[in-house]
Each structure stands twice: as C-alpha cells, then as structure tokens.
Image 1 (cartoon, rainbow, N blue to C red):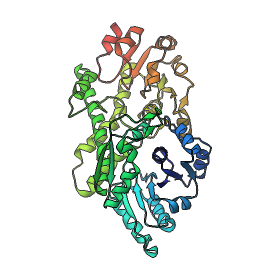
Image 2: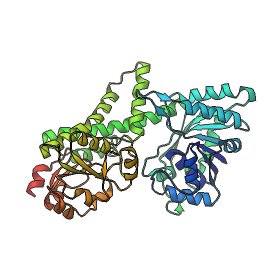
Image 3: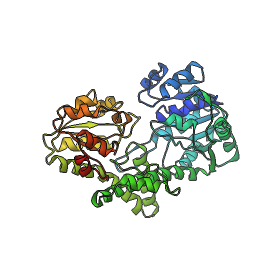
Image 4: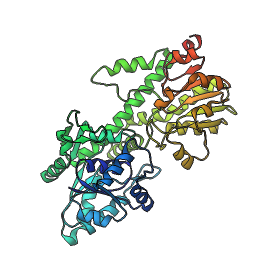
Length: 456
C-alpha cells in the first residue's frame, strides 16, 4: 500500500519505519524543513535504539522517503496516518490547530476518498471532531473520508521492538471497510509472517491480539491504559513510603504482589515517579475529561498528586542525610525521564536537580544520552563528561535515572574520589548490601538499607 505519515516525531518515524519493513511504500512528511533535511541525510534529532539504522536501510531500499511537500504524499496515499503532536496550554487544554490544518490539506490534496488514521494520542472525541472537519472541508469535492483510530503502545527506548512485537493491535473503526484495510496493512504482524529486521530472523513471537472497537472506545482505551500505568507507579511509591516508616522492603512487597496474575509486576516499581510526555499528559487529559463530564476524579487526582510529591520526598531524604543542602557539591547520575531515551520532558531527574539548585547546592550531572537535550533546554544545569568526573569531590551522589550503565560503574573508584561516600539511589537500582560492603552510606526508597549498609 501507499502510506503517508504526517508528522516526523518519534511516533511518526517508528510507525513509518515499521510499515516500510512490512512491505508498504511510505512517505513521512513534516512542515519542519530542518527535520526533513536531517532525515534525508540519515540523521535523527532524538535517540531511539535501532531506529536510525533501520530508517537508513529502509530508505536505501526505496520503501521509505521523507518530504517537506505533503501534497504529493497525500495525493498518492491509500492510507494517511496523523502522527502530529498536540500542544497544550498551561491549564491542560489541547491546541488542535495542527489537526485542523491537516484536515484542510487532506481534503484539498487527496485524490479520492481515503482512510485517515489517528495514530498519535489525542484527546478523547478528537476522532469525532476530525470527521466533522473532513466533512465540512470536502463538500466542494464531494469526497467522503473514513476516520479510524489506531493507538500506538510504543515505549520510548524500545519503540521499534514494540512495533514489530506488539501484544495487541487496536483498531478503532466505524465501518467494515476501514477494518479490512487496516487488517491488510498489519497482516504480516497479525499473522506473524514477517522477517524482523531487529534480529534478521523470521518472527517467532506470539501473534498479537486484534481488538476492534469504535473510534470513541479506542481513544478511551489509550488514555485509560496510560492512566492505569501511572496509577501502578504511584501505588508502588505509596507502598515505598509505608516501608520507609515501618521498616519493610518495597522490593519484597512489589515482587510478591507481582506474582498475582491479577496485578502483575510491570510498572510496580518505586522511584522518583513517572515523567516523560505521555503518562503525565494522558493522566491529566483523563482528569480534565472526567471533570467536564461530571465524573469524580478523586482516584486519578491523588495518583497525580503522589507523583508530584515524589521529588519532595526524595529531597527530604537528601536533606536528612546531608543535614544542610546549601553549598554542598552534589553529583547527579541521570537526566532523562527513563533509561534508553534522551527525552528530558517532565523528567523527575530534571525536577530534582532544579530543586537542589534552588536550595543552593552545587550540582553537576551526567547522562549517557540526554546531555545534549539538557544543555539546550536547561542551561542552568552544569554537565560532566562522565560519572567519575561528577563524583569527584562530591559530598553526595544521586542516581536519578535507572540506566543499566550505572550498575556497571567502578563503584570502589567512585567512593575513593568522593569527599563523602554518600550515595542516594532514587531508582532503587543498586543492592544495599553491596554498596555498604564497598563503604558507602547508601539510601534508597522504601528498602531496608541504612543500618544494614553501614554495618555490612
């Protein structure tokens, strides 16, 4: 099929790349000329494992192209995916002007009635609004467009794997023809008949569930899923606070809970809270929707508040260990909101650093991938070239992002270079007994560690 992808952000590029490897002819378009020029040269403006290499290979095989000119891509397309981001005001209200612009462009340039697929996460009821826009703007050409919602469940850091090895394919459609077209588009994944480019082998994973719903249900499923994941994280942090006061171990509690198939272990991990673009945004969007419809938001509002308080809880832990934060030299390991991404949007690590700076600390930070993003967006943060550099002469070292790289550091070398061997693990990444054995004063969240670490 001929596929047009409108929007060359992470969702658009992963979707376009994935569909190209399924055998479709894909053109990704964006109005940002500098972004298109970089993509045409084989370069990404963000970090996502495997994506840059796969984009280059798909381009060389003439299955994937990038263009600033959306007209030709839309004119030739059998399916058009909308993958634009949605800006929001300070009070959380969405700006859907990009959606309206896409609707005008599609109705002006499409050669015939085409399936328009909402791929990026947009507010619930956006599908209905898009259908109305297309109907109004297409009247003069007497074209009838179909609208579908095909939510992506792509995790930053493993987005390409999630595309090729999806656990479910969700099709929000209002007519049989749209369902049939999307089933054909994803047929290699649905039937498990493609060669996965990540491993250069035939697909050997379980076939995904294919869920067919209405457009409205598909929109709500995406928001509800992300809000539930946010709730699991906040619940784990609530339990961690209890463990800190009772002497329990949140790792033991979460592990035992995870064995219950009704609960599961995924996202049931204590830390500095959830960040990034999607979970906070979708949780807030669902709260706003419920408020507008007169549905109680007590549960979701508390999930949000627990997350907001996580940095405060950890700053208090740092203060208790350091006594005084002002003028102390503190090294911070991690800037991105999670490992395996360079995304610093709504990052708990950034929020923590900003709080420490506000309280007068001398902070230096390091991240394997997010330093360039932090340098551009947070110039007030001093950056180091390595974990060893920021640890040197520090009176405390904080782990703020759970990069696997940090597990492999030479911790004895780090302890020897610090002014005080104080390690505060905001991700529960390391083992208390091991750190205590090396000679660290070690603190984390909701785990039996302080007294054990100091006496090991």
